[in-house]
Amino acid sequence: IQGTDIRGVLHVHTHYSDGSDTIEDLMKYSISRGYSYLGIADHSKSAYYAGGLTLEDIERQHEEIELLNRKYTDFKVFKGIELDILPDGSLDYYEEVLSRFDFTIASVHSSFKLDEDRMTERVIRAMKNPHVDILGHPTGRLLLSREPYKINMTEIIKTAAAEKVILEINANPHRLDLDWRYCKTAREAGCSFAICPDAHRTDGIDDMQYGVNIARKGWLTRSDVVNCLSAADLLGLF
Image (spheres, rainbow, N blue to C red):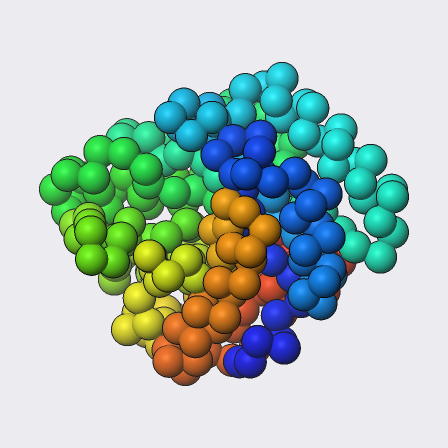
C-alpha cells in the first residue's frame, strides 16, 4: 500500500466533541490533501470528559452534514460516531440511534485494568453488535505513557474476521495501534483494515502517513484497507 492509494479519511473529531475545528474546515483541508471523503466520528455520550454527543447534538450534526453534502457535490461526508465500549461490552446508544449513522467505531476508553479474560469478553461482545463497523485502537496503548490493556488479540482477530468488523490502524503517532506485528496474522485470518488519523484538528489528518507506514511494515496491500475504496463502495461495505 502507498499513501496515494488512500481515497478518504475516517475517524476525525470536530468541535462537536473534543476536536477544535468545524466539519467544513476539516472537509476543506481533506480536499486540499486530495481526499474525496471524510468520516466524522465524534465521541459518544458516555465520553462526557470529551464532550460526548447527546441525541440533540447528533441531530444537529447530521443536519449540518446533509447540508454540506449538498453544497460539496464532489466530496462525501460520512455520519459516524466513536462509541464507548462500556465495561460490560454494551454500547452507549440504543439501536434506533445507532441505525442513524453511516458507520460506527467502537473503542475502549475506560476501565483499562480489567483482567485479560474480562477485557477480551468485553470487546468481543461489542464487536458482535451488528451496528459496529470498526474496532478503534484495539489495544489501547499510548506510546511511552500507557501500556496496552490485557487482551487476547488472537480471539479479537478471530472475532473480527467472523463478524466482518474492520480493524483500525490508528495513525496518531502516540498510538500506532493496531501494532504492525498483528497485521499479517489478521490479514491471513480474513480481516480488513481502516487507516485512520484519529484527528482532533485539521493538521492531524496528515498523520495518515504514519498509519500507511505501519500498514506497509505489516505487509498490507491496498486491497486490505477499506479507505482505499471509493466513497460509494465504502458506504456499500458499511
